[in-house]
Length: 575
Ligand code: TEU
Ligand code: CA
Image 1 (tube, rainbow, N blue to C red):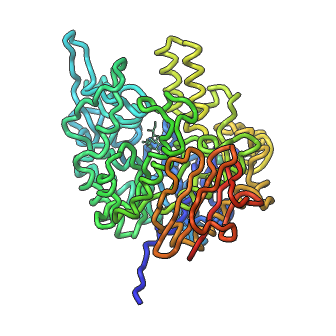
Image 2 (cartoon, rainbow, N blue to C red):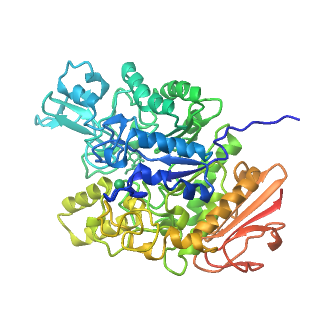
């Protein structure tokens, strides 16, 4: 008999934690590392195996820690290196693993490296970042080196008066891009950002913006998609540059010494063969990536927030999932299943129905849907209790994310304060903003939901839904979304050949309301049926869909031929 040994990360379920918003233990209104450590029993009780901690490094927090000023230090309000050592030890003691966010496309402008780099043109670290001279138009006006638009609006180039050159930043001006063409820079990144933490015992990384390190050395202009603007969306131009494969192989040589887990964030990569170059088992670069086709659904093509709520059809969601799932069938690569993270609005509000009537049922349906997909499963804090978007009545001042604020200001400026356009922008942010994921974790009832003391102002206002969506209540209820998530994860473990490793076959692709698919591995067959609508629908036909084969569902009495609104079922036909 041959025994195939699978890498541990394939069957793992990862729980993502946003430190600022998890749990405040010292009453300053900001979540902290001891808050994570003290919640580990709760986290483990959900049934997850790995925690992913979002950036907790020292940072001026222009982009919530994705702007790191010192890789080897902890942001003081979150805690200390000792707190991290304790978190690592306590996680391991429970048999779980811990991964950190590796943010090395850019640093903070306050990082020592950038301070030196910008100090003079002949500083030894000048070349650690990307500096370019200005261009001049026919009238002699100074122009940036190209037309790229930053992820947070405006040009990707900022003029530096001192040395009279532009530097590149794909995100905020306070997030200058590192120059990965410089081998000395690479070495310093590996030492400080990777080896230091691997030696401390972390089990791997979620690798931020993993496909942006290498840029085309000619820095070509992006095609014009927005004729009225100076800057153009350039994601397809600056992602997946010529040295990406070389860099990721080099990183992997270090990571594999530690058997470290890697999941890369891979936006703007519609070309599947590029993804396979990164995640193929034989390519030996990354274990898996996050693709964006699902979470981008409904968002605007030119500006992500220039859109309307629910701007997609169910078949598009099916197609997006089918594409990521097909990696298992057609390539030697591995994939991921996720629908939330700190950059996305809440899934119940986007893909379910967050009204009182259907909120919990649709949260469970989504748990069943994403929890039965192949690949490594990721859950974001609060998703397990079905947290929803911020209330619509909240003013725009409650939005704290630089991405939201910049967008709203841009609309304000370009429309010359037009009320209609501003209302439209606000409606889009109410649906898609990253802020919805960043409000504090809802532990209990009360003004601050148990995140911090009720008389402490939290860094971000606690969603008023904590009155009826909170951990304390859901721990008591057998029919809660939390209880359901636990059942999803145990089903996933019990039938892992089908749900984690099975081939995905879409059924009834064009059905606008019902999402059904088969998960097949050899003669093991499971079928998942989800009614993604608020109306009753017919059960699709598939041989053997007998109610006695239902292993998990979200309604009390499943009917024989119809599905109730937002009903989801998983059948195991043979195992
Ligand atoms: O995100 C990078 C990314 O490509 C997007 O999801 C990004 O949020 C979007 O383009 C903004 O409009 C990562 C992090 O997940 C995000 O939180 C950081 O802001 C970003 O990198 C910069 O480090
Ligand atoms: Ca705190």
